[in-house]
Length: 145
Image 1 (tube, rainbow, N blue to C red):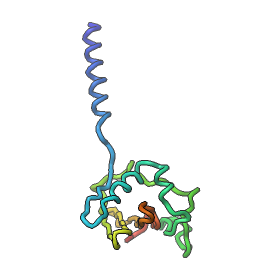
Image 2 (image 1 turned 120 degrees about the vertical axis):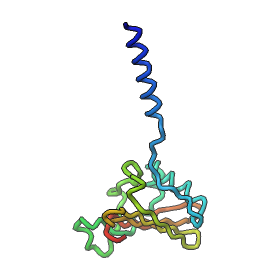
Image 3 (image 1 turned 60 degrees about the vertical axis):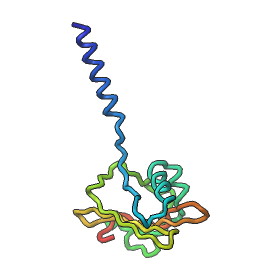
Image 4 (image 1 turned 90 degrees about the vertical axis):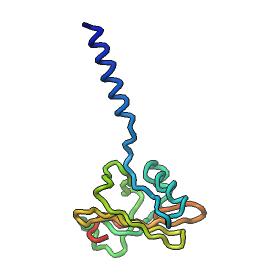
């Protein structure tokens, strides 16, 4: 009888191991023809490596806070390094969002990610300086971004 439980436990552990090793990374693919090829590699690193992300943001960062904050009326708003919340795909469901990118002369990529149901979205602008990409602008969750 103990051999039966041992084998059952072995199967359960093996099944848990294999399901736990699946690639659960949620990402936004960057395979659009107009997007520079090196931007895709940057984009993946930006969302998966917190140190890389912080080193590739030009603080104080221009942008707008979320619509539900009292700061939304500040005309000259800047994101500060101390207040930055890291961007990642931990809670991202690709089917829930529309993603649009506009490329300007291969050195600027403007990205809008919008919730399909609410219409709220974010706007980010990335620019390439000295062979590296940086986040240069960020509008937090706002309607009709």
